[in-house]
Amino acid sequence: MTVENEALTLKDRFRGYFPVVIDVETAGFNASTDALLEICAITLAMDENGDLHPATTLHFHVEPFEGANLEKEALDFLGMRDPFSPLRGAIPESEALKEIYKVVRKEQKNAGCNRAIIVAHNAAFDHGFVSKANERCKLKRVPFHPFATFDTATLSGLAFGQTVLAKACKTAGIEFDNKEAHSALYDTQKTTELFCTIVNKWKALGGWPLIDSNQE
Image 1 (cartoon, rainbow, N blue to C red):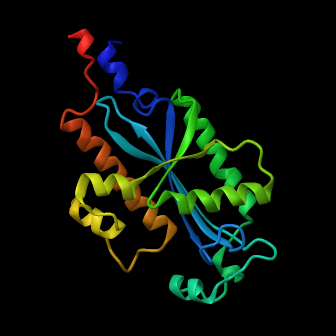
Image 2: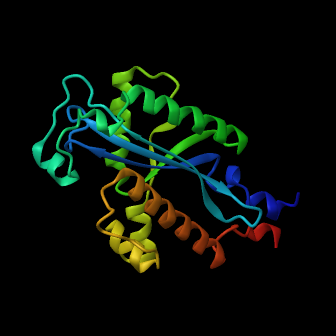
């Protein structure tokens, strides 16, 4: 394999990080007190041309943890009357996280990456809720970096001049249905499309692989 081709691998694209797109829906804005209600994770893969694509999708409705705060405004915003309804098919947050981490660790290893990293739109929010859920569940084998993230709000601000997910997608030529928004599955799918579009566009414009002037 040539040096150029080695640059077109996932393990060398982000300094050994394995990007996983995450979105959460919650019963408020406080990661310490408010319930995690839904989570979706989409892993990524790189093809032989060095283009990034979605790989595996994992989506779970989550039971509110014991003693969780449930803000009525947040539930109304999500259109959720009863977060404890069995019709939601929700599972404990520990089970959801373990299922996601099992797949992430496997695909991370297969890609030759050293550690996973969360990709999200306004990533501090999603990272904060996932981190607090990890603490509550006393999970020791967490694949994600403890504080670093890739934030598509920042990236799309640079690439498209937009920071709102719907507007960034539309500017990027990605279809976005506002009626489907605020579902963890839909928002993760759109964030994935947006992130892949930005990364692949940067490559197509000649920004990747980087050219080492010493090798010219």
